[in-house]
Image 1: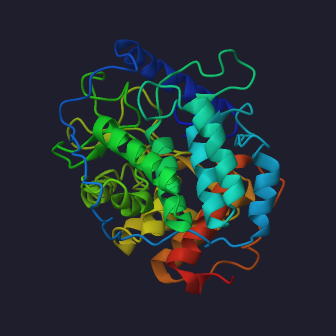
Image 2 (image 1 turned 135 degrees about the horizontal axis):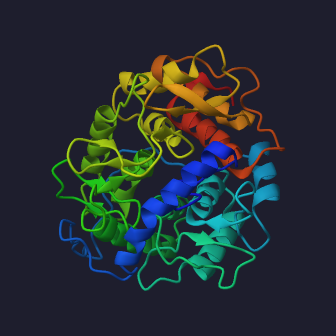
Image 3 (image 1 turned 90 degrees about the vertical axis):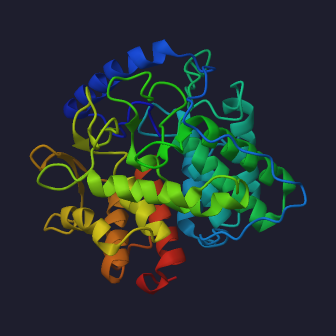
Length: 393
């Protein structure tokens, strides 16, 4: 997650107002519970597997080598990854965050680039592992001292890093990666996943600020935090959790979160009763939510019709850009114009009915910002892993 409040990747008057409302909505929640607060009672408490227990089979597909020696990764590494291993969000004040570190680690594994993986993981350990638990502080700001002003985690970042470590351990047989992946997965499973909720397991966006104790409309959810392909692989390191149930709950909530005439989920959703747009937040399908169909298609989760609202939104006449949509009326309020975003619509069309990627989609433009470039590469990896007939290697 690029910003704890939803992550504006590009600044504009509409999004600035949205972020301001988001910050106001979250500020009281943060103040009510420190980072080291008690674990919500409706969470699973993991047992410790025996050291000689074999790793269970995983439903997901292995990531290593799926990107190969792609020029897009080389350009990404040169532009966004420093020599120290910090992944830079170029459209968000040059900050770094656990999301970006996780994405960088995943891309390095997919490119079989162990040296870059080690660099990114090393910076992450040294700079974001500053909490009292095994989770990561979510944001690092280069021109602030201290560089970390908010000790809260971002659960999507923790999931991405744990998944990347799992894939690295599988690819390179490094025990320390597996140990670190397990510690992180067990910790966010214990602190940030409500396994006993009536809706099924719920992924809280962070340890602090989103539970029913902290918000009147809580628990508060963001469906882009359901990283479905990660949940297919995390049984390798944390088999005591029911990751399949986490996948099912995400798909079920997505089917209930078809808001407004376009049938799209909002960024922030109240799960207090039936899912609905959360209080105090703009009811937008926006920067974070565009990752929902990416993860859904990547994992092959749900049914093809679960992708239909996204295919309908992205398959019209204006295919060269993606809209940010006001779910109340189904109208675009702003556009994402950098070309990397369009890879998401290509992946959705491929997953739903086998439509091949358009010519030139394999090429990643090097004049884009961190987020669209990342999504472009992830969409290519997802297609290569899950729908190889749609892409040309």
